[in-house]
Length: 208
Image (cartoon, rainbow, N blue to C red; front, side):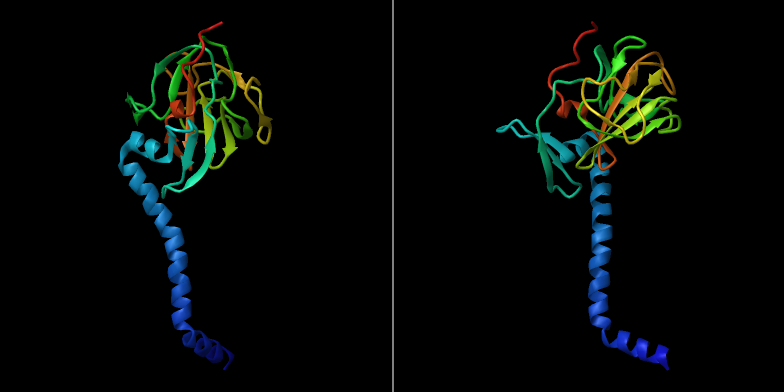
């Protein structure tokens, strides 16, 4: 009898329950469709939709998959390593990637690596990302922004550690899927790669 009463009560509220379920479905499904739409525009199109520089304020504007403004940041001159850019974001990158998801910088094997912006280490070491080697570091900067530092020959940070520009988190190497020593520097928003140059001013400083 108790189950019958519960069923009867639920049936009497079937319209309200349907509305609630519909709202929940929309909250879950719409962001997924928004992300799929971004990715269908290609890596550069997705990057342009998620992060851009305001031509008036010169602030970096970070947006979500539906175009809503998350935050504005100052662009930085702190590149993660001194050296020469050997491959840009979005360039063809076979056989490893269809298009390159970051910027490769060669500063010389063993050169110190720092972070482009303050954050907290969320992953460090081996098996962090496929092909990135034994000393990959991922840093969470808040607002859905993360940065990746891959192919390093060593790292000296731990998960949970707060790091800031200027602090050495590792050393350039050739670990993982790498054809020679370099740092793979990648920035993601909501796990989608974006062009690091949108956050950066100029080019990496030359080797010291």
